[in-house]
Image (cartoon, rainbow, N blue to C red; front, side, top):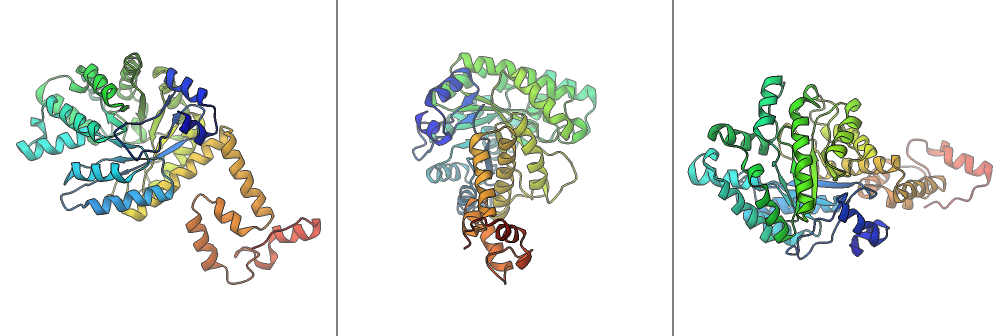
Length: 417
């Protein structure tokens, strides 16, 4: 707590109070030896998470470690290993060994894959296998786990009766719902929630409860099924806090701009201020190939209204799995959104960062401008490759640089590079 307080520029007591009342979480599994703890929650800078992981038997651990290094270099605050195939234990352990950032997983992904390998069908998965995977991952050092504990038969029935456009888009949610319908049994993650709490408490794992009924298109945003599940999530937040387990809520991916404030207000009310981990969100369904930009728009507004954790979205969203370059684009776009949201909230560090850039621009201090940029590497590349003239001005204005002209007339001191 002292370490994250120092990183955030707040008092350790501020972090302690936030953790105690559940509005701040510090995902920190003691078995994750290289971890540099990160705090997520109310009154702190908005954080960003990048998702990586094996998606086929042909995937390699080396490729995923390259994505991890790319995401960390781009400034992600956390990573999620969402492997669904291949050497899932091996890649997770390699990521944990290499990552100083908190690492999250979605255990159901591995349980489904292993049931398919063992029995030929994910429908033959047993609740015991899900818990075995959870314990295996927790023992390895996973810091937070996404679980679809609130996806109940009541939410499924409501979605069926209301007639969604896109009934199911959550990979984990669709598998747990498929299992429930096939066996005509309630969600085992809901029925055995106390067992999940005991496991999380034992290993120091933070829970990230995800919405299996999240809307996959704008037309389904804030429908009854989504709200039904959110009500149950609020109940599960209470139970986790009573058990002494840290918990945050992972939210929907698609919502129009005019519903972002309402969605976050509802989540904060029903879930008693638990940190909100939003997927994007995406305020239009049409940005295929550019969903990192789409998500940055929604993420900035979500951060402004109180979301504390942004799951990045890459240009490959909806059409494929991202390569390392697209991972970088996703992280940078999410960090821009986080900074914009923090500025709107008046976070002192965010305001100071932007003001420092303004001063560097006034002084035509190109070295400082590049250093302060969210993506210095890309900024420096553009500066060097596009500016063939006078280096004391920008390539767009050249000798007519407004900053330079006004500085000369007003006798403002410049520190050109």
